[in-house]
Length: 69
Image 1 (cartoon, one colour):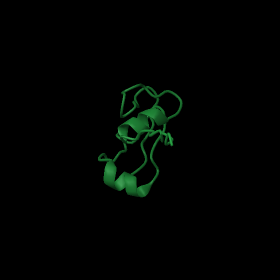
Image 2: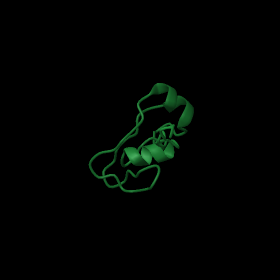
Image 3: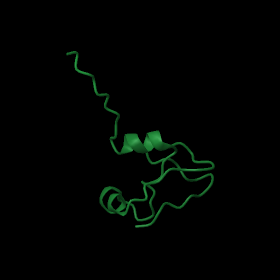
Image 4: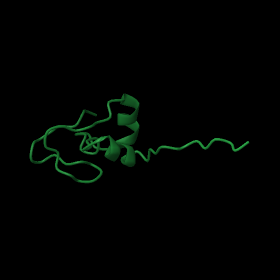
C-alpha cells in the first residue's frame, strides 16, 4: 500500500468528492493503511481536510458533561 498520488485537476476527496487543488490530508499510520483502506493506489486515503477524514473514519467529539452535584 502506498500513499495517494496527487494529480492536479483529477484527484478528489475520498469522502465528499471535492476536487483537490493545492493540498490534501492523508493517513500515514501503517496499521490504519493496511487495515482500513482498500485501494493499492491510495485513492480512498485522500481527503480535502481533517473534517472529511474524521467523518470517513467515523470520528466524533464527545462533550463530557459535568456532574450537577
